[in-house]
Image (cartoon, rainbow, N blue to C red; front, side, top):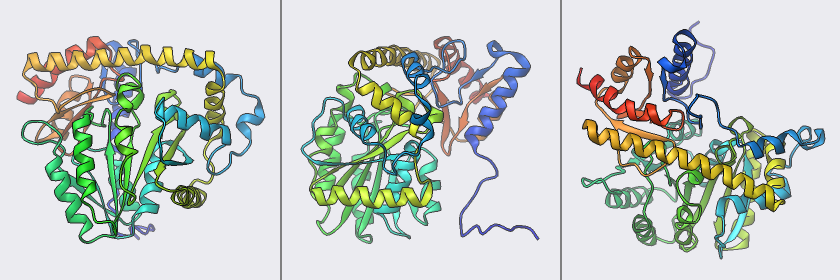
Length: 409
């Protein structure tokens, strides 16, 4: 008997490429030492000595929680204090005119999953950009949906609004519902962020969608608080808050990233609805899906975030620590960008964030070649991903020449 599982048409790989590459890197560190290895696989912030960065103010708040604050169940949609705080964390100083609905999720993955489950139908295709986080496809497949990709960049390296518009029209001809996932600012895996001109282009495309079609515009903003100044990187919200009634923006906000609580699995999905009825429906259907999949999200990080936003001094301390980490991350990204230009290494247009991507024809082969030099990257469909989040600035300056040499050999 070859299998007991019901695969149901899903393509399930033997291993997850990200965790497999990370495992190899850790083995190499154990064998040769951290100074002899470049582990650019990890999607989390590490300091120059290779230690996970946890904001001290967040750590101390977590340690101060009484047992009841982490051991008790949280409400399905999140505690009231958390829901209020997470909206402030996600939107910053922006005050929307839309009606807001909030549902807590275990990481941004949960927010994407619930959006696909509730705002598309089995057999639908989910639209996203050609360079995207691989689990978008896995989530869609698990829910019996497919993926449609639009080319993310045009010939000049700008956001390809023309192909985006073409794919939106193509899919809405045959589907009543359409989920669109845009991962910006600081896209994973490229580090690209849509400009305001790009956003007005997106709005123009969506303004042409017939009113009898229902669009869920999912904005995966997992890396927003490491993409630039908090107010500037949220400027796009004034476009998202001004779309037609048949477009529902859903912000997938990862507190796991913003508050360095990766293992805490804390996030929320936040809608900007035209009516209180649509916002209430959003909370109802997404809470139902949460109950039917993971049930409750972890309570401890919710309590931490509520405490941070109820204490002005604590919030200021968190923001100052995060700003220092953001400055370090941006310096690493710029260092890689500069050295790539000097080495003649092509990279996908980069703005900010945890990752830089190099296009290539044989990503798996390139990664195998680099592993011989104790350099570990993540192979993608059309390139390799470099985590500047887990690599020191010095290593970010060394990497482009090493990658270029491996590509040429």
